[in-house]
Image (cartoon, rainbow, N blue to C red; front, side, top):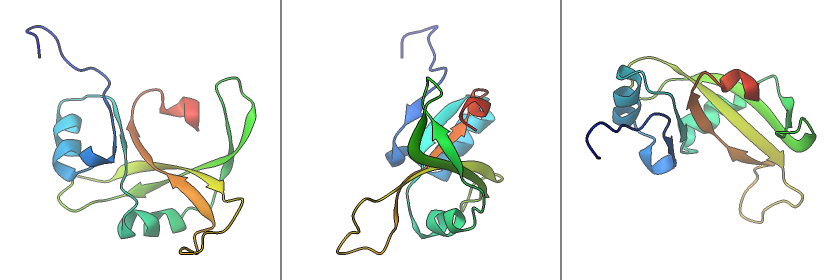
Length: 117
């Protein structure tokens, strides 16, 4: 990284979804987005979501997706965090899965979070 430069708002894929990365970013007060792994614990947390709302695009137009949120804790993480979930009903069921929805889980720590919810 060039001297005097720093990353202000990183957006990271699920490869970086680990307690060490989350702890590092949170300690430094960085706003960020990391896509959560859809592991067993995350899927269990998603099943606890009771309120799903229509998700609207940038122009305020309602999409086929829904948005919900829950609180999640991962091993070695210093505290709980907010897990935001976007889901979209599958048009066709999968032969090898009984999942009814496609899921995307960005973990967001940003002041712009209220724009999504």
